[in-house]
Amino acid sequence: MNPRFRNVRRIGPVQVASYLARGRNRHLAACTAPKCDFSAEYDSRAAAELAARTHRCKA
Image (tube, rainbow, N blue to C red; front, top):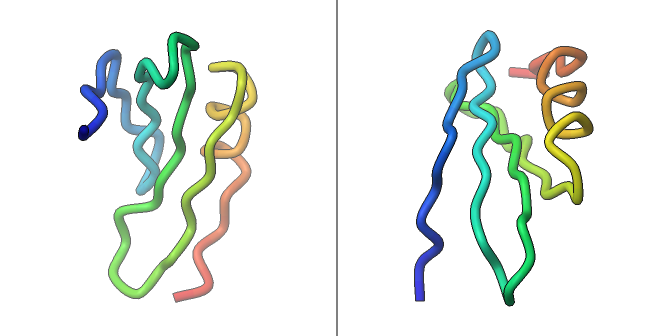
């Protein structure tokens, strides 16, 4: 089953979204720049947004 993303926000080239997984809220930060493979899951929204703000693309 695919997760249903909600509360999607863009911070620079990184999108931050929340979703429900196994009954728990999870948060994802993923870079949308070409050839950048950054993505990570976090337990808190604040951590995901911090990762988005401090991300520097290698591409």
